[in-house]
Length: 255
Image (cartoon, rainbow, N blue to C red; front, side):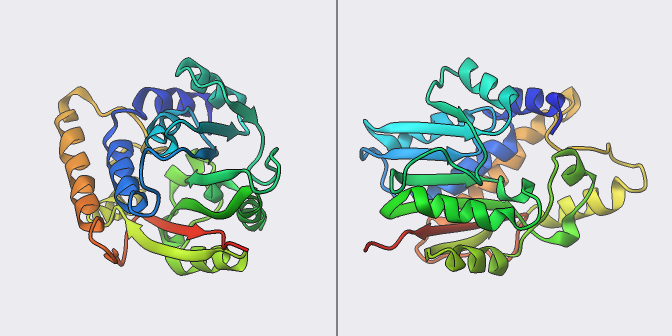
C-alpha cells in the first residue's frame, strides 16, 4: 500500500460503506462465539489505521486491546485515534509470549503475505492464543477476482473458503464457523474490476477511495446491502455460498 492508501483508509475506515457493513457482518458472526463485554485480552494482527481497535472494545470489557502492524504510517494513524498499545511487527513473527490472548483478529492481512508466509502467520496466531481462545480471520476471495485493485493494495493471493479452512485446520485450529461475505455485490464488483476498469470505463487502482459528491447517496445504500447479509448471518448455522470475502472463525483447542 502507498502512503495515499493509508490516508484514504484513515479517512474512510469509520464511515465508508464497506468498512461499516463488514463490521456488522463480523459482529453477527463473532457475537455468539465471543459474547461482548467479558474481560478479554485481544490482538488485532495487522491493525492498519486502527478503526477496528476501537470496534473490538465491545469484546474486551475491562481487558486490553493490542494492535500490531508492520507499517509505521499505519501505527501513526492508530496513535491519532488515541491507541497506545501498539507494536511494529509482522504477523509472521508476533512479539508476544505463548498463550496470551483470548481473541485474535486478522482482517484482510493474510492476502498481503508472500509465498507461504500466510501459513506461518496462522501458526503464530495459534501460538499466542490461549487454549480455548478464538481467532477471526477474513481474507479476499477468488483468484479470478484479482485486479489492479489488488496491485494497489499489494495483495499477493486470494482464497477460496476451502483453502482458508484447510490452512487453519492444518495449524491445529478447531473450525467453529465459516462463510463467504459481501455476496450480493459480487456480480457488480466482478463487472467493475474485470471488465469496466480494463476497458477504461471505471477508475483504475484501489476501490478504497471517497465517493464523488454526486455518488454520496450510494454510501448508505451499499452499507444497507451488507447489513442485510449481517442480519441473515445472525441465524445459527447460516452460511453464504459465495462472496468477495471468505471468513473463518476457529478455536485453539483446550489441552
